[in-house]
Length: 342
Image (cartoon, rainbow, N blue to C red):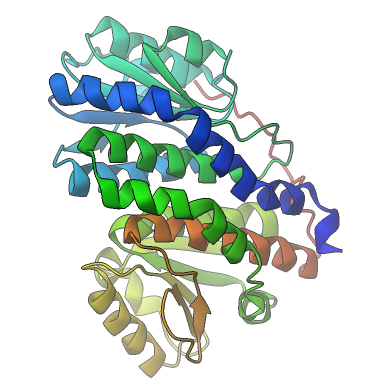
């Protein structure tokens, strides 16, 4: 039954969409990378909503760790409601959107361009209003996405961020890992992660934990649990959860954690063990040998690609969970595909 949903079918298209995107966007990102090496921006500002904003969180960690450039998420309401102009001269303004139609993002991108920023749009609809006002467009090339729950467009957003970074920094290791990515995504899609369904089928609340490169997918997983399963899930950094929220974690309180093989892994693993000692059932998704409570992720040669694999495995699991809980993941109540905020 899980294969009957649009969310399942569209998620399953992600490996092919990523392969297409990487091949067809190579010239675009190569040119942009060379441009930004010649004239580096002072810093980077991201603009996005919903799942795209979780991709912007991922971009922050990729850009700051690989480029050394401060990257901040903008607040669209500063311009759209408060009417305050920003000083964005010599800044890269990265707008991320599936539809490219939300009025506040359009207004913010226009204001950024007027303020001297270079506007680059990561957008799935290549002829959208956002694409038309940008100085450069990196098409997501995810193809039509009809389920309210964004899946393949989110994965293509992460891949576009990685591909731009790889050419900007001329990082051969990351470029090689991206060549591995479509095959690794097919392997990730084959993982059913049934433990997620069994843990959460009767749950009411949970935390989703990540850190660094994994924080953006923790945010995305929490959103998907809310919108497709009607489940109250909150995402936290493994560092921030210690500042108050972890008092809620105890006997029977479920936690899902995402990790990757980088400097954040040891600390996150220590936190997971602390939660388990309190009686919390914890599933940790990451590469490596399978142990109880471990959700496998295919190996890949650069840890920056691991979150892309993990979120695809999660999409398959959350689709199954939604159906087990009696929800239609394609049509969550009170939501629609394009949310036009101002």
